[in-house]
Each structure stands twice: as C-alpha cells, then as structure tokens.
Image (cartoon, rainbow, N blue to C red; front, side):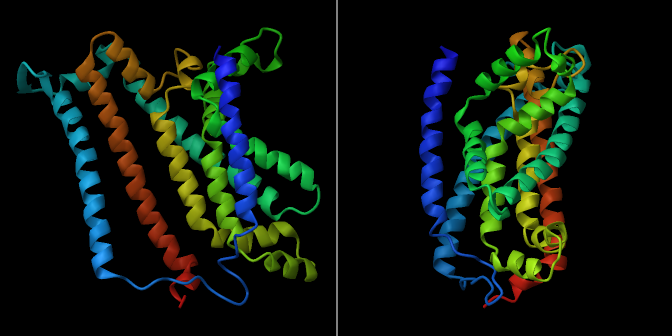
Length: 315
C-alpha cells in the first residue's frame, strides 16, 4: 500500500515538471551583458504593512518555541514548575544521549557540503549543458521526483535495497554515509529548483563568449557562474543543513546504534515518557539551526559586499 500511495504521489510531480517547462520559456535573464537587475524603490506604507504581518506570524511561532523551552526547564510541567537542568542530561535518558546531537551536526554539515556541490553541479549541467536534450530533460524530471515521494517511502526503499545480503553496497547500511545520501536525495528538489532559477537569470551569452574565446567551461563555471550564483549556493547549503537537523521520516529506518540522530532521539525519549527531555533535545536542534542561520546571514552579507557589487549598481 505504501508503494501504491507513493506511485499516486508521483503524478503531481509529473504535472509540476510540465508546468516548470512551460514557465521556463517565459523566464528572462536577470543578469546579461547589457543590463543589471531592476530594484524597486521602497514603499513605506506597503513595507510597514508587510512587516507587521511578518511580526504577527513570527510572534506566534516564537510562542510555540517558548512553551517548549519552558517545559524543558521545569521539573514536571505543568505540576511542578520549579526550574531544573536535569532534562538536559541526555546520557541518562531513553534517547541516544549527547552523541545523537553530535551525530546530527555531523550529518547536517556533510549534507550541506556534499549536497550543495551535487545539487549545483547537476543543475548547471541541466541548464547550461549543450546537446543530449533528451537526457537533460529526463534528469530534470527525476530531480522533481523526491518532492513528491514521502520520506517514509524513501526510507523503506533504502532498507529493501541496501539491506539485501547480496547487495555489494550492503556495508553502507546503518552508516553515516547512507544517512547523508538519503538526506540529500530527500531534499534534492528544492535545492535543484533554487540553483536552476539562479542559473536561468544569467544570460546564455556568457557561455557563448567564453566558447568563442576558447576558454574551458570549467573556468567560466568557477570564475563567473559560481560568484554570480553565490547567494543561491549559500541558500541551498543552509536549506540542506536545517532540514538535515530536523528530518525524521527517512532516517528513522536507516540509523544504527552509533548513528542515532537528535531528531530520532526526540521520538525515542517521548516513547519512554521523557517528554521534558524530548522538548530539551528539540530546543537544542532549534538553537543549532538558529545559530547556523545567523552564521549564514553574516557570511552572505560579507560575500555580497565582495562578490555582488553589480547588484548594488542596479538602477
């Protein structure tokens, strides 16, 4: 039945693929050899209204986080509200202890680095490659599929494939490598679309001029494409990092005794009745993602000043 449901869910992905192909024909280059992107002037009333809307939504989200953090700091919510840090002693709880938290950070870093490279290079080959149109179209279609396939289906598929004794890749089962592969595949679609959108904003004449000057494509890729698309590359990295920290659906079937993750540990502690400790671990995941997002914002601002001067000169 899981296979039937997953097959049905592939239909929206096929529809989205054709819609994407139609929208692609209407998209124009944001950066060309003749123009730079237009930046609209501020509209004070409209901007303040949108800010107020975002503040309301942000307060509601922070309220939920505050309740979880408060429950993690009291002895027994809501009966004994005296403060304690005992719930953060994860090594004495039913989950994987602090090692699961460190495993999640390791998974997130590996997923962000490896996944960003794989996603952006794949998007570049699809968007900027020449020839083999049918193969590029098939790859674009396959890149859309993970969004339609539930993580539970991916996890079960990985079990059936990698856990087979005759499979030479059986040694990957329950290792960090299979968790990284699964997570990259699970969240591949959004990163791919982000990279493709950024690449489509570049005028194809950049590659044409480079070819006319007999410059290898990899030099154009490294010295032109990557610097221009650097904001999108950073967005892909932080997207993969945050989702790797919070993912449960696929990895819950694939982890081993030494690769248990913080998100899985939250479920295990909740199953054993350690709800406050589960909330504490969940907040550690939240704070880690907040810190990663703040670091990403600072790095993006620094790199923007060094590599995106053409954006500030737009009129």
